[in-house]
Image (cartoon, rainbow, N blue to C red; front, top):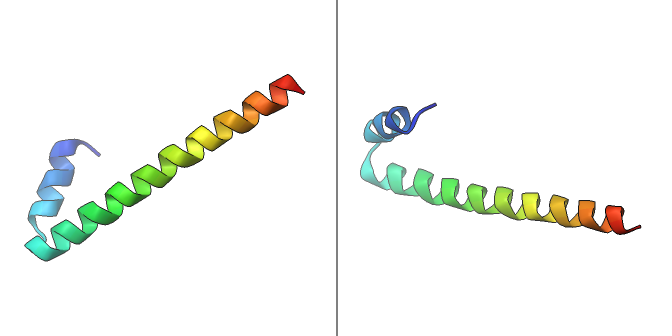
Length: 49
C-alpha cells in the first residue's frame, strides 16, 4: 500500500477516527522497531556464545 493510498483511506474517516488510527499506528510502529532491536540484540548474544 502506498502513502497516497493510505492518505486516501484516512481521508474517508472523520477527524477523530483519523487521529485515533494515526496514534495507534505510531504506537504499533514503535513496538515493531523495539521488537526488531531486541531480535538483533538476541542475535548478537548468540553470536558471542
